[in-house]
Length: 223
Image 1 (tube, rainbow, N blue to C red):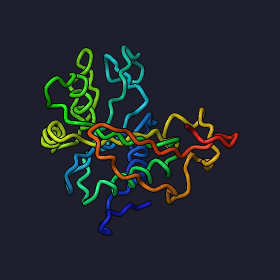
Image 2: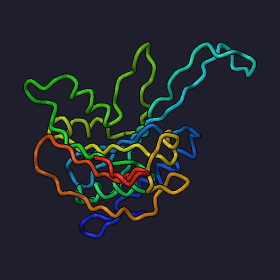
Image 3: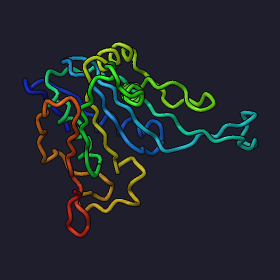
């Protein structure tokens, strides 16, 4: 399902893009995040968090036994889409979460981390949102990034704040076996378009909005 901005301009179809990446990698998804700074027509960073392990062998032979298993790093991808209104990105994230069977979509408005007394955790969360985390324990890569403008986006986010959307797809993800959702089709998807509408920003520097989609088999919507 395609999303459009407030002026009728085409935004981005996150659902198709995510599905293409799942098909290409063959790995199941744990979750998805979308990060943007509050400046129109700036790149958007889509990060796919995979659930899987890579076998490391002493020799590149099938008969060689694995000596270590490393987590598949997340994939951070830069999307150079045109947009004029954050509500268009909000709608695009909602459409993707709805179509791919997520129980909900969360929108977090994060404040600038370059301020007096800001905890170090906020800086790490900002770096993670834009695919720029340093190597993890023992040099293990946590994120594989194709984000050429990440440094510029991080600079803006650190000074002006940023918006982060988060959801966990059932379709293409690891959640199918534990999903209790009567709104899903057999393949874990929902028929577009999303019936919910975006909620305008509260204007606060730090806030969270959660769009609930799932309905349990007993007919109870998540709270």
